Length: 90
Image 1 (spheres, helix red, strand yellow):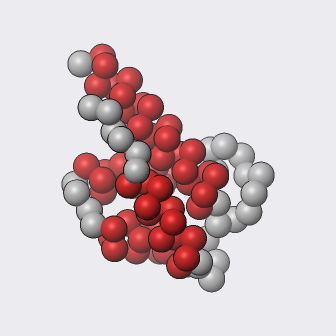
Image 2 (cartoon, helix red, strand yellow):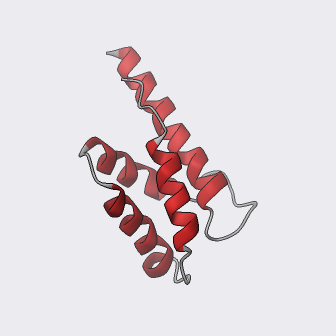
Image 3 (cartoon, one colour):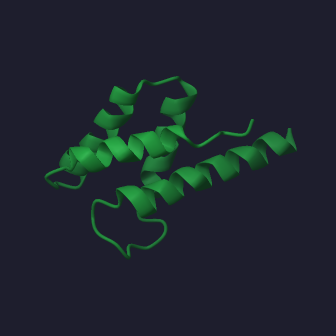
């Protein structure tokens, strides 16, 4: 049980790293917790076996509706691919 919790923490940390390093729609140099509000949503979507289009739509919604930014579809496709590469480890 403890290993599952630790694996989950590491998995969420890796999702956080991708959001900070590869997504970062606001701009480089944000505080490391800038996108933490989105980590749980993405983790839940992955656990529920969301398709790439759903992950893309969620991140696009976050960029365009939550942050009022124009969105960057090319970057979003790369971020979805990077998130998919993360092994939950449990």
